[in-house]
Image (cartoon, helix red, strand yellow):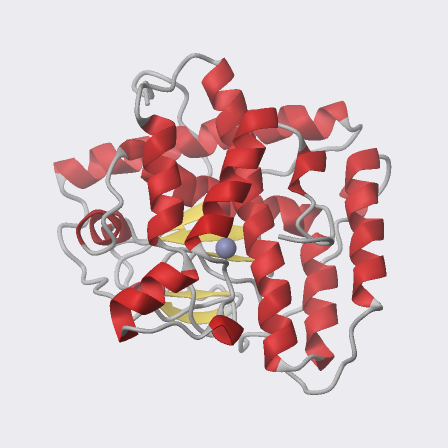
Length: 310
Ligand SMILES: [Zn+2]
């Protein structure tokens, strides 16, 4: 990705020297209230369609047990917004020059997502509100609770922030076999995709809905939400490609990342077998398919993962 020299976002909060601090506020996962995006709830026809579909889909479910809420992280794991992937996540080299270049990269990708989503929202008569991206080292406290870097990057709907320990990128490369800058960009774009879901009210509906569901049903719904975030990442990549800043192999490296962090691939790798009922992010095939779909058309209407086959 030809990112150097491009605009860097001001919405980075660097908490790397502040392990586990922040004082943003406590609260356990699932207990936080999600502000419904009033300003984003109005005119957008595509968003409206998605919401209507989502509502229809909702009523098909039979609530039975109470589950925690919260947004999924990037990786499979628990049902909350913070997922446990039993990975590394050690604090290594925070603040080093190499990391500073990585920080610049993250700030540039974030800026690209801001520009793209601002444009898309505007075309729907809506206003995009930039998310913050918090760089942390080892552990962090968000409005969604306390998280360790081992859980992977995540988005907290309660404070509209993406949380990222950049050592995850090394893990992505070395442990998951997903190398390349654009694999990293995809990770960021996926989390920003959750922010878009938050602004458009999709996420709050999702959290309401899964309150009364069985774990299996909630997992299925989580997969749909995650695949939509992948598709939104693809939509972002579509517009980024139009700017002429993608290089050969970029899309392939994002697609490979989507493959490597698919539920089935990860479960095979970590436990040697798969448990489909526990999938909550989607299979490798599904993640690649939805990322590619968003990338191909750049249309949100092609990201309706909320009904029909996925
Ligand atoms: Zn996610």
